[in-house]
Every structure is written in structure tokens, then in C-alpha cells.
Amino acid sequence: MNELSRLDAELIKADGMNTEAVQELLEEMATEDMPQPDYEKIRNGLFATKKKPAHSRRYRQLAAIAACAAALVLCITLIPSLINNHIGGSGSGGFWDGIFGTRHQIFGLSDFFIWEEPDAIVHVRVLSTEDRVRETRSWDIHEQVSTLQILSTIWSSGGYTPDTIRVTQPIRSVTDEWILFDVATGADNTHLLRAGNEYILPIEYLAWLGEWSPMFAEDVLFEVGADGRLQSNSSIRGFSRFDGRRAQSLADAINRLASGEDFHAFNTGFGRSLRFGRVFAEVTVLSVTHHTRVLDEDYSYDYSLHSMKLDNIVSDTRRPRRGDTITAKATHRSYEPGRYLIILERVDDVFYIGAVARINEDGTIISTDTETEGLYCVFHEFEGFTAAQMIREAERAKAWIARNVR
Image (tube, rainbow, N blue to C red):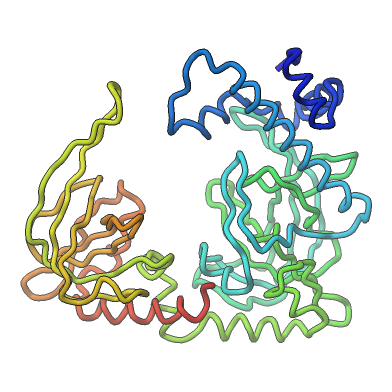
């Protein structure tokens, strides 16, 4: 968008902006660090669910202008944190939806484990920091690389954590100040690690980079002061309640959260797959029918409908119940009549089949899904377990979810 049409200018002026201001905004965004977004590609992605007639030029103009206005709002909301010049995270406690993706809703410590498992939660001292530019095929990525000394490990997934690690944080420059850049949404905050300071961090190992990354730094950064007391740098109540308390109180809370049979049942691929109201059931598939849905002249897809009786069920809701017969849809493959363990997701009163394990004649299970299907491999580590054992695992995982997931 090198120039704005007369219609664009009129619409923008009516909204309190002028053409030159928008042009300056676009030029400022199109820097070497952050190339100008492909608004046409973004718009097509957002509105791909319905074809637009070729003559809808004004519609395309309005969409492009809306994208510019959204970018301006982002810049305006950033100004107060730059003026105050202090560490301050998003503190949103809500969903971030942006052109780069979606971030999850964060409420407190349990979110460290709900969305993805950290490799460890550690108390660290920052020995040094440096800026780095890492080249990729598409663009250069600016990062802050910090060298951390591990003072103590509060929680570990069981892997090895060395005494000294290097962690990376994506950054970009705003008014000559380097700030943390949230690659999930394109949002900014100033949660960068500072040399000489101590922190309590959940961290994950980035095998493809050979370095580590602090997790959830966009929402909370637990800083340990010289007096051993905490500052969460977060407006989210689940984190800020630790402000002014001893670091050990946070460590104790994490250990209480991440211990016991219920947590260990949840803290697996299978346990995590039961989040968000999904249903786990032992079923007997009675029949299967195959169908094709045609969306348009260029695209169609196959699916199968399975009639199944629920022999046993672990669910957050009253319906369906044990003994019910339901119909469930599968798009990745179909399942012949027989006994299975199935994870079901209900969307608009339609049940969709997720992970599946076949129940052998001796009661043990074997996964029916392949490694290439990724998300549907949650039964692999439990092959040889009985269906009854898996029901107990599901009940324990659901119990932890019920206590800790809002």
C-alpha cells in the first residue's frame, strides 16, 4: 500500500486520522526488523470462510484501513509503558488474538502446566546479557541472549538441567529501547531479564536452537529482591498475590501444585488431552458409514460416522452418560466395529473422534494411530495398560483439571 485512494483518505479523516499520519505509520512499521505485514494475505486468511465477489473493491479497502487502525491502537497502548520505563507485562489475564496467532488465557501458577509442560522451574541469577541477530530464510530475528546461573531447581520434569544455561528472548527496537516481543501476537512488553538480577522462571529447552527459553514471560516475571522477597511484575492476581512474600512461599506453592497422583496422571500427553471438557470413553463401535462433503467445485473431504455405545465414561458434564448410544465423526480415518478407548470432543452438539486405542481380547490396549498423526499419539506410552487402568488415569487427570483449570 504505497498510496491511499481518495476514498481511503475520506474514510480515515472521518475517523479522526489523516492520510499522512497513516502513511507515516506504514513506513515506520516497514523497517528491516519488522517488514510491513502482507495485509492482503492476512485479510484473505481472516475471511477465507466466504468467497468475496471480484467487484467488492470498497470491502477490500475497508479491511486494509481496519488493519492500519489496529496497528495504530497497538502503538498507542504501548506508549504508557515506554514513558513509565519500568518492567510491565501484558497482565491481560485474557486471550490475545492477533495476526501472528492466539495466546492462551492465563490466571496463575497452574497455567505453567496446563498449556505446556516446562522442562524445569528454576531460581536463577543473570550473569550477563547480549543482543544477537539470528538469520533465517525469511528475515533476521533480534534476540537477547542471557547467561544464567542455576541457583536451585524448584521443579523438574526429570530431564538434566546444567548449572549454567543460555536463554533467548525475541526483542525489537521501539524508540531506541529494546523490549520483549511476543511472537505469538506481535504484542510488546518489557519483561527482559536484567544482568545481576535473580528470578524464578519456568524454562523449556529449544532442541533445534540448542538453547533455553523462559516461558510465560509475557505475563509474569518473578524477580527475587536482595531481601529474598518477590516481585511478580504482573497484574494477574494469581501471580501478583506473591508480591512481597518470600521466594520459598512460591516454591512451596509450585511443589504443592505439581505433586500427587492426580498431577502425575494429568502431566502426560494423555492427561493433557482431557482438557477443555473433552470426554474419555470406553466404547463399542456398532457401525460405521462413509460420506463425502463437497464444499465447492475445487474442494471436498471424506469423513465417517460411527454409531457407538458408551460402556464407560469420564466426563465433565451430565450428558452423555454411561449406556448411551451416540454418533461420532472422524475425518482422519475410520474404525471398524469393536471395542475402543476414545477421546471425544464436542463441538456444536457434534462429537468428533480424537485419540483412539483398540482394546484387545485380554483387556489391554494398543494405539491405533501413527506417529505421523502427532496429536493423536497420546496412548502410545500406555500400550499394555488395561482399559480399567486407563479409566482410573483419566479420573485422576480430570480431578486435577477440575481443581486447577478455570
